[in-house]
Image 1 (tube, rainbow, N blue to C red):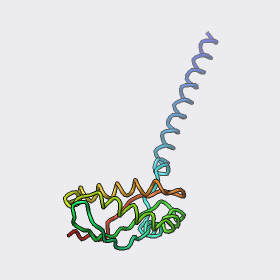
Image 2 (image 1 turned 60 degrees about the vertical axis):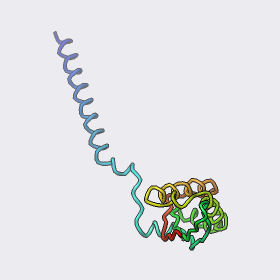
Image 3 (image 1 turned 120 degrees about the horizontal axis):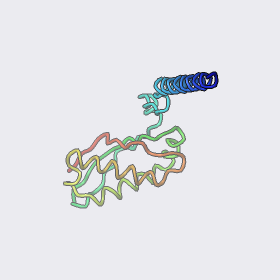
Length: 143
């Protein structure tokens, strides 16, 4: 009988310790859940890691021409420096991409978003010190 009581007490203690451990893990995960997620950059951080591409005027495949400028957001200061050094390559990519498009393809939100994504992908192939986060069209005149 004494043995049964001892086994029962040990089982109760084991269940209680397991329960306390599970509750502790849940509490820790709940309060530290935000730290695992990357925080959104502030406006100052975005500006510090962005490069302005001055206005470019070029012909489109449809015979129209476009005057357009961009701001390219990188993921770090080092990536920004690299992008500034590769300015001529970036302009070449932009002109090449635009020369393959028709005016109709650039009209509307969907056309501009497609161009931004295409440029992001193309410029990212050049990058060695970081990556392009987003390409913004800062001005655009299509004629």
